[in-house]
Image (cartoon, rainbow, N blue to C red; front, side, top):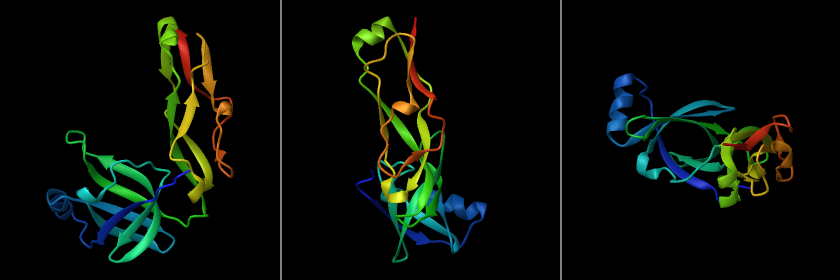
Length: 180
């Protein structure tokens, strides 16, 4: 479950022209959009004000011109050369609101003996889940220590927090150990 809520301080923006956005990026700001029930807001976030670690299923407190909003990060566009964000999208939510989100998978327990017997292949890196925004996990651990050659870890073996449900089939393979 997302225990720590990140805080991002932003400022409202009115200009959305190509030149204005380029100038913002040159000045260390990332243009962003907040989508909510009351419409959309255009904002600018200082690059230095972005959290170092975040996922799309973690709640974020977004402070825009003194007003706080609880949001989920929905999309991040990244400059392929500089590896810096160039645009972000957020969705305003209430903590108990049921939402869909992609949760990253973390594969744990792979041993040297397994690596000698076969090649470990990751088939899926994130899963779509639904649940209350404040109950969404930041990541899901997939234990692969018990896999033998030609076996797979499946979605049905995952432990989900209470109130969170999968939006995918339960027999879906996440990773496998295949013979060389």
